Amino acid sequence: MNPITPQNPNHDLDHFERPALTVDVVLLGVSEDSLWTVLVRRAEPPFAGKWTLPGGFVRLHESLDEAVERVLSTKVGLGDVFFEQLYTFGELDRDPRTRVVSVAHYALVDPGRFETIAESAAGHRGIARIEVPWEGETGGPVEVRDAEDRALALGFDHEGILGVAVKRLRGKLNYTPVGYQLLPERFTLLQLQRVHETVLGRPLNKDSFRRRMLASGDLEATGRRQRDVGHRPAELYRFRRRSAI
Amino acid sequence: MNPITPQNPNHDLDHFERPALTVDVVLLGVSEDSLWTVLVRRAEPPFAGKWTLPGGFVRLHESLDEAVERVLSTKVGLGDVFFEQLYTFGELDRDPRTRVVSVAHYALVDPGRFETIAESAAGHRGIARIEVPWEGETGGPVEVRDAEDRALALGFDHEGILGVAVKRLRGKLNYTPVGYQLLPERFTLLQLQRVHETVLGRPLNKDSFRRRMLASGDLEATGRRQRDVGHRPAELYRFRRRSAI
DNA sequence: TGACAAATATGCGTTATGCATATATGCTAT
DNA sequence: ATAGCATATATGCATAACGCATATTTGTCA
Image 1 (tube, rainbow over the protein chains, first blue to last red):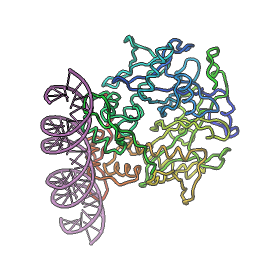
Image 2: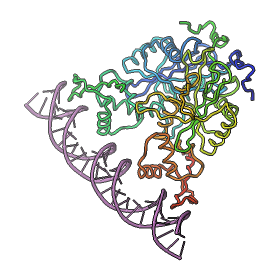
Image 3: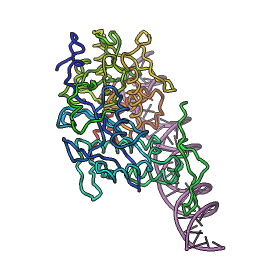
Image 4: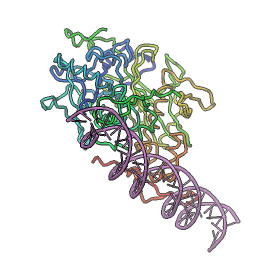
């Protein structure tokens, strides 16, 4: 026990032996009825050559949000992305170099933007999109596999962070309209349902999904309809900006 | 923009100009149909004399959970308390001395333990329990008042953190059985309902509350009943330890 | 012009919820 | 000892939400 002494309240402030602070970002997108995330390959030790979540150290003069925006811009080439804080991981052995505490975030992008990441991934070798596997019904740990279906051991504790992010997103879908961040501006009810089903990993009842969504007040009919779909076109909706009553 | 250079990947690790890291704890308890929290009076600048959440710097060799336990033990004299991480606050101007990022937690204690804190508060002048006001229906900011009903400006951004904690607890009550952390081991259904009502700030329907709780599978009848209550005594329940199936 | 596929609408049984009412039971005052 | 009290507990019912099945509508394509 080593309390802050009243004699020197700034004891800890002057002391340089403090944990380092990072942000890590779980970037998620839905495409082809699968949930994908974006990983970057580490060039340097520790975990050189391993795939990890995009992340970086928090600078003295930037907020956590600014650090996330810098990471997304620098490492993935994205700006203006929706993200929220997920959880802060502070176990002692997360990083073999030294003590590092990481404020994890999850970010959501629509299919169009995710496509640009996929193209970027095709060009560079240091970035990849990986299909997020279902957690087993048991809620076991996520096991990531690459395009050739080889098990992929992520660096640091990032596999655990990915699992927490997916779990959080699934929970959020049940009581917030966060799904719209995974869709283009205009979308049909069935597209929205498919996104929910993809994230949740289970089929949803079409009628009650429609009723709930329309009753929620979060959706707004645009008056436009689908085109060239080979069947009766559906109404296109957009998410209503929540009035700040 | 000052990216981590591949030439020196440990650039930031070696650099001492990193944010300081603290934990702050919103300690909550229910008593007399009110929700209370525990504040400590700061002895030193900044905010000397102001009331703040108990908190402290995270040491290099302790995890976040260990830091919280140390803070609860050192500043409030409590051990073995239920707590969970709340949110990490990282705005630039939180602390006038230097950049400080705080991982906020909320902790819940039963009335018996809260009573010991209240006694301790009566003895020492550096600790107090404060009734948490309802947020208005508008969800406006919490305004803290002391026992003499004087407005109390908390130090740092702790008023905001308190508001987030109450909001989180209210949300959690709707889908998890956290309420039992605010009760003694054995309790009646009406006591549990009163706790929920106190936290949520609104009356609940007795019948559907009973039905939901009994159907949830979280409760277990102990076979014992209340004593000396001047009316028909109620069954005493305890929370069933969730099997890890 | 008709087949097709999905959108949209309607009906209905099941279940959850809110409310009202009736009965049970330990304690207390007389 | 007993009547009355306050709350626990049980039952019934109207309403709303939900899952499921079925019918109808409407662009597109062969």
